[in-house]
Length: 84
Image 1 (cartoon, rainbow, N blue to C red):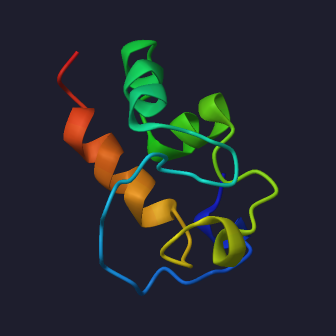
Image 2: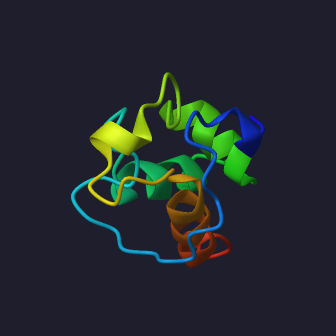
Image 3: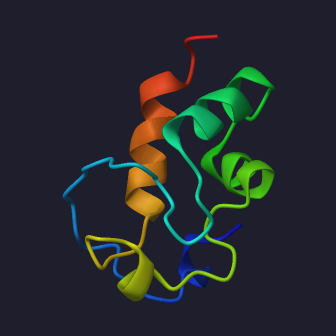
């Protein structure tokens, strides 16, 4: 999945704060991302595909930060990648 497909397209925001969900639109948690990596996802795009993150997103409404979750997904992916 290409990060430009996110509806809010606000990737400039560098703030990373992981709350209850990493992707609020599709209720994807940090644990979901971690499990996707454990199951073999080798890229952020694979994690997005496996978890359903960013599908039919409405980040400006659903995400408490009001921004796209892509950078948060990348942050969590980098946190757990190469640990399994």
